[in-house]
Length: 583
Image (cartoon, rainbow, N blue to C red; front, side):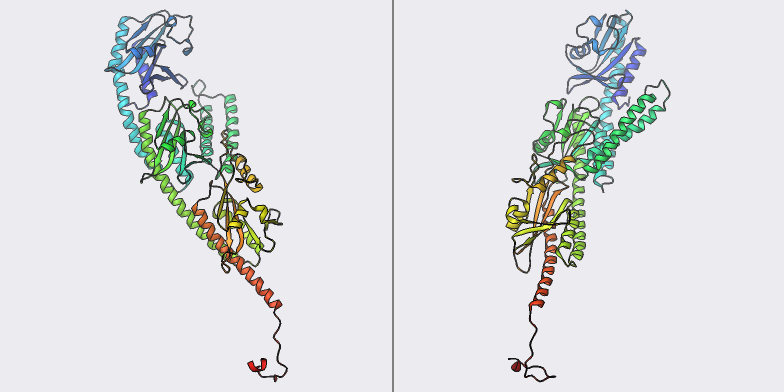
């Protein structure tokens, strides 16, 4: 009584049966009603699943709810010879007894005896009494205690999930760790929802975090297992340890390298694509025992252990106002398949996770706004004291990348006389291009319309939409190169980076184009309304600085070209020339 782990329950029942009825092997199966299968664990800890049908001895006993006693199980066509390591030429007797509660079968007790001895009617009655008096209370207690035990732990998990939410990495690890422990699954994917664009966003660095944690734990376990006494079932010999340690160290080194490259990279895909996209589109949940038949995305096809996806449970996360903020996806149940109880737990966990994700997003926006104001003030102090436009171009490149977290930010100055745009390239050389040659790029479109322009990158070719822009192709290629996940997964190149063009307009002459600020490839994925607002303030400060420089330059020209005043020849010295004398 009080057993909350299925492995412990099945092991305890099998030991009691062998003490009561001598035999070679005793296997206890639990009946999973939702999927109509029997499952147990083998000696190596792996899972063994048997369908409830007439094609297996245990399945037939579960289907008919009757005791089956066979004198030679190898001669029975329902017995699968490949499920045992015993000699098939050796005569073996088998007895299967269902564990019933009313008309419902909770499990099967299966005994195997070799040496030519068969099970007697007296032993059959003993097994039937044992199933009713010992095994049934054990199974019933497990079914009653397990949900209460999991719900009791769920309260503690809520506290774990809600603690230390100041960092994105800590919050993601808390949510994924809590869901993984509660549902006993190999991997948890956490997608954020972009409601405006109807897309899901996956932070690719989170997979490298999970990989790092897993590899570090495995390396520690190798050292522990190598120190065990020889003959222990978990003992690891030095040669095997050295091979496994080399493999883990190699993967650990690769993961650390890719973690730096994947920082800030995201994978975006629309609603309706993949399992997570379908769940976000319908707003419900999804559970399957055979995920291989579904159209999975690349990030959904394997777990952190490089195992192919078999089972999956997916649910939407909502905030306190009922708005969808994310999708939580549990991959590969460790024992069996996901049940209705797992669905209930994930629904509760998703609700708590949705509140925490919404709270974190609000704090992130507030922090981003505060940092933007501080950086704008610092930029204004530096740029308004500039005496030439080349210095302004350098300051725009320095502050613009930090302001809205882009990979590149540059200022193109408008030359009205030559009808061209010029800037400073990577080699610190002046580069001038006519506006007509930039007509289809984000720079040219912004200069012509004098309005903010956002231009996406073609996901397949890597070019600016509708043009062969070299800058866009280069930036998108860099994003693709950063798309290799260290665990061996190749995520589809759907980093829909973008380019933003912000006009710099004069204030003295309304509508006068002074230049264009170009931002390339935002690290967070796409430019939003907050980025547009910050760039408007950024361009206003830049406009003031450029007008000050041009105003001072115009004054110098006026001073040089204005003739000196001529005194009247008839005016006496030492006396101011009156207006009449001057005329």
